[in-house]
Length: 245
Image (cartoon, rainbow, N blue to C red; front, side, top):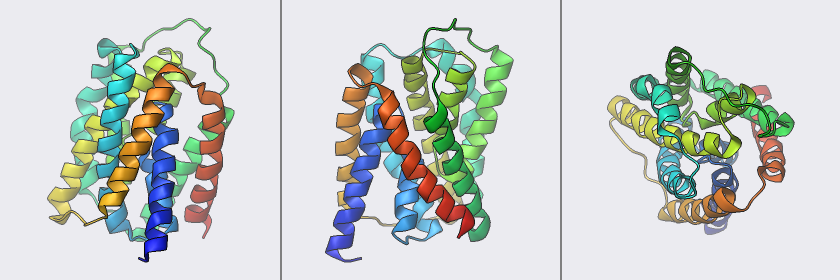
């Protein structure tokens, strides 16, 4: 990869980390889209996205937790089965064709949720039963491991759509959910492949810089509405490319 291409890749990763962390996510689906568009192999994309996800999710959770947007009683039922299933999903390596389709569907789903999510925090909040939360977390954990994402792109919309929490609390819970599942998914992937692909240190620096600024502003000042629309455009383009080309 040329210096110019590496610079563009790092800039795109910084932007993704900034936008995602501002809404309580870590950016895995965005990293996957960017690395796919730059022509990286799926075997490199999955673990690399998980590493970047772990770093940014740590920053994001810290900022939302500091701002008071986290609930342990809401978090743990989602996480208890998601972690072992994320490990299992990370261990499995899908054929390239199916990997592209599955990730494309994930991105398109995320785009639709960001684009059409008009829910407010005015509705009455009713946390899910423990059984529903545990079952939901299990399914999302497996999916997060298979796709190389942390699962937050699914959990946050579900929590908001079903009025399980306030929007910023959903972001804080999702941030830690993403972190633990990304760690489990990465460990599962390493157990299967026995290697961690080398990727440039500038990518790590870019993700940390974008995540630090985005999570700080998102947890305290930003309205997530406009950011969700920008994310929707990016994910629609990348998801369409993966599924239909």
